[in-house]
Image (tube, rainbow, N blue to C red; front, side, top):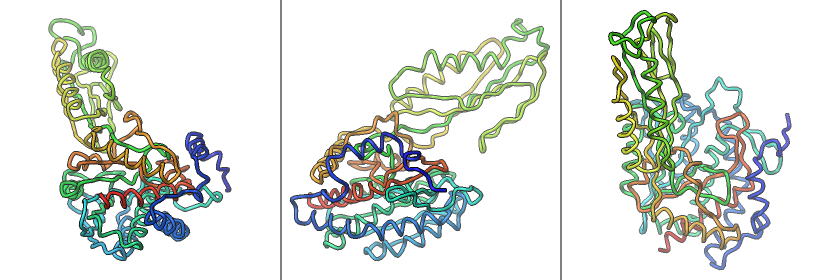
Length: 439
């Protein structure tokens, strides 16, 4: 079925593209001869890049389709090797996933870490499987924007630098995870290679589509932390609830805790916490993976167990620690004859806003304006979810995300890439890397 682009593309993306100061992409320009050559090479290579994107989109690489994830990595390996990168595959067996592609290239200047992922949320049993060119601008398919398109942008930018013999001006590491959409466990093993790469790097660049807005880039992301509250209480006939001997029961205690979170912990900017599962009954079986609960009970029995599971998001580690302390304090103030505990599970750390990140944004903004693509401002962290760059951000001087191909509908069967953003994002990245090499 042929879909109308207007039914796919969010108004914000269309408005942003329409308001750019250039006619895309023909009027993009620069006064620097090397930059002009980079732009020319990027422009000439667009069709080949889009054809490669179509090929890797048509390979199912759902996080749990290990063969498909490896196949995408195998297709990309020679592309990086042709650019002079040494490519290795990190076996994901220790953390229950396919693994990661890591590519390194020595150079003279700053060490740049490029971060992306090979996997998508669409497993082989999902009906959304294939690339579909809707019209000249819009292509649908799993991973078009999130984020196989970002890999294509990076490869094309690096190839433009190679053609101008500029790659040696920087050191490069590329980490493409095979489990970004469903991280392996234990997480410290699944992200060990990225963290070690970040410790050796100076600058981290994320290839996600982020806000899907060519006028925005990401300087900060909030954390993703899981929490579980478990409550125990005395069970008895319901007629005895609130008595000195029986007390409040588990359901009321859990209600007190959740209301306490709302009343006493809520309010600080960028701090949110949400209970995704709440259960209380006489008998309760709880599973964290996949999240669920099976329970049974009677209305005339005071419930002896209750549980709530949720997530917590903060902008900095200090916010995270402070919020945990406040939540623990609420949990500890138990109602009569009840007891409760809270457990936290760290998933993604925050990518805190830093002067270094904003400095890199300023450079990227300067590149964009010099190329005729208009200014770039930072995404509100409230609108930036967790991503792999957060594991690297604390270890580098500067970090910036959202530099991949843009589109919309991520994680849905309506996912699409707006191919007009290929030239915008690739030219920006190529020139940014060139200028970082000059510094």
